[in-house]
Amino acid sequence: MFPEAVTENLHTLGPMFAAVWIVLIVSVLLRPQRFLNSMLLLFALLVTVVFAAGFFGHDTGARILLAGFLLAMLALFLVPALLITNGIQMIRRESLSPAHLLSLLLGLFVGVGEIATVAYVLGIRGAFPVDGGDRWVILVAATVFYFSFLVLSFVLYTVFIQILPHRMRFDYVIIHGSGLAGGERLTKLLSDRVDRAIAIYQKCRRKPIIIPSGGQGADEALSEAAAMKAYLLEHGVPEAHILPEDRSATTRENLLFSKRIIDAREGGKRTALVSSNYHIYRCLRLAREIGLKCTGVGAHVALYYWPSALIREFIAVFSTRRFLIWSLIGYLIFISPILYAMLR
Image 1 (cartoon, helix red, strand yellow):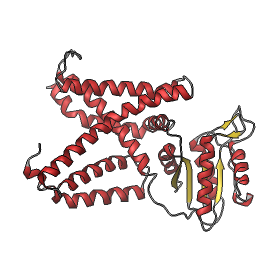
Image 2 (cartoon, one colour):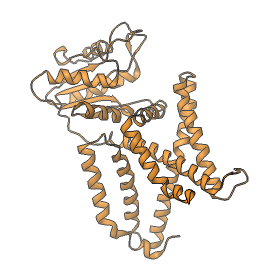
Image 3 (cartoon, helix red, strand yellow):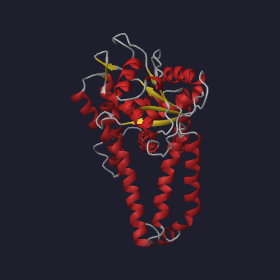
Image 4 (spheres, one colour):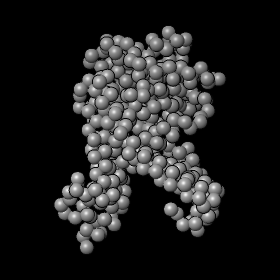
């Protein structure tokens, strides 16, 4: 399965194991919005599995390596499986719309690509006739798996930053708005965000100022900030500790206008931004762009809603110029051996 000389020397990777985790932790603490952290996280998990396998002898170590490989492959195949399942759930529970079809269509695309790739590699070529040679098949396979890798790393890192410990010492807590039910009531999604902010408020020894952020939509009777303020008052937060921001219409404006409120006040500037857990990563990226130093704290989201929302977040991040450029550079590096072979 694996050469004995390999499994017996895996424990020598100790320095690499320590170095990768140190670099990852430092990078996350300094710039949690950096997408490179997601790649470092996957690499750190890989090194951890390989390093741990070196302590169990050849047979057990080989089984651990095989299990790690199979788990990685399963994770890649879970990407389309979760997307397809979630797409069906969203259509059943919400409505048939392009946004809700996104998860289903993306899952079908990735799933068919991965299944076709594995079938071809295993020699089941009759079911997947190929015109143009094996290199084109390999190119398509590499593209599909590269995309799956990006999605998987994004998902894992989004979860990872939610479990990072942080001190409950904040001067301000920004709550991101998300629309109102019936134009005047908090949706479950938004009330979960406000509840998370209240929990932070209660845990802070020195009570922070809460900034509910969100303007009034064309179909809303009041601003999201006003609705959140009423909810905060109902749940025991004093009015003196609430500073609504009621002009914003986008996530960027939520942060920008809230930052102006904070900058105009004296005292500490330690800030927590609260949004749904799938939304935190993009919030941190936008916060860095406008110069707002903050800690992201995710609120609970219904499990059926999370994957589809996360995919929308991934696309929103992916479509930004910087992320798109670096992703394309990474893709070209990844497939460069294939391109070189095709052009020879």
